[in-house]
Image (cartoon, rainbow, N blue to C red; front, side, top):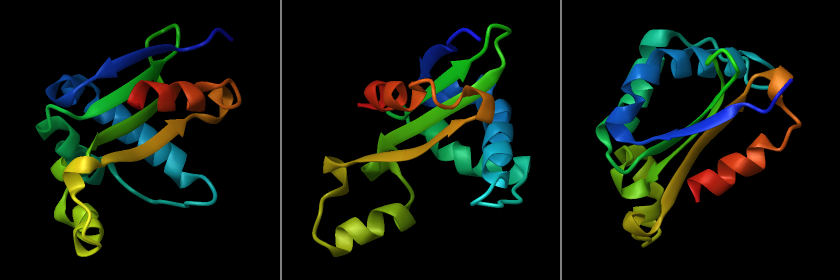
Length: 124
């Protein structure tokens, strides 16, 4: 199986991928140890912060047919929801100095190929 193509999208550029990314999140997080029973409606709400933030970054991993097989997310912590910023603020840390690294997701067949490292390099 060839390596997937990696594509970076920022902010509104994620729009065409929201449903595919939401479905990927649900699929990966349904597995042990998460056992998450999410749905696409929740995922659309969750991903809306990335859509609204022009400084967000999502790296998409796609197979030869263009299907999404993995992704990783990040955005400046200052642009994240208050619940994520609050612990930093209470500790006297400026959220503007931090990058929030969201999740890294890969379907099982694509794991163990060095994509996690590539995801970190692309987010940094």
